[in-house]
Length: 100
Image (tube, rainbow, N blue to C red; front, side):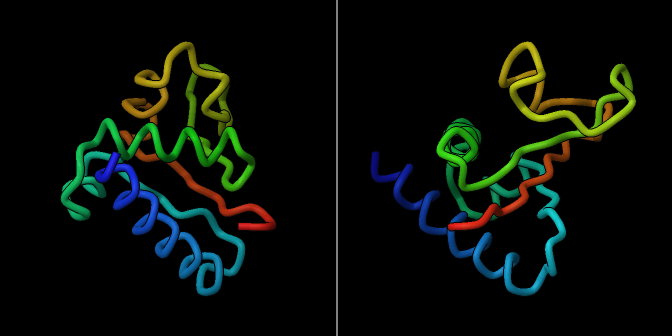
C-alpha cells in the first residue's frame, strides 16, 4: 500500500509538470524504466496507470501495427499485452486529461 502511495505521488507530480510544460502532448513512458527511476515495482506502476485511466484522469495509448493506429489500453487483450507491446518498443503514451 505504501508503495502505491509513493507511485501515485510521483506519477501525479510528473503528470502535472508534463501537463504544464508538454503543451498537450502525451508523456512517453517505458514502465520498467520509469519504475526503476522511481524505485518502485513495475507491477505497482502499471496498476497505478491503469487506475488513473479507469478514473478518467489520463488516457493510456500505445501504437498497434495490427490496428495501424494508436490504441487505448482497453483495446489490448490483457494489461501485460498493452504495457509490453513490442510494436511500440514497450512505450506507453500517458495523456493527462482535464481535471487532473
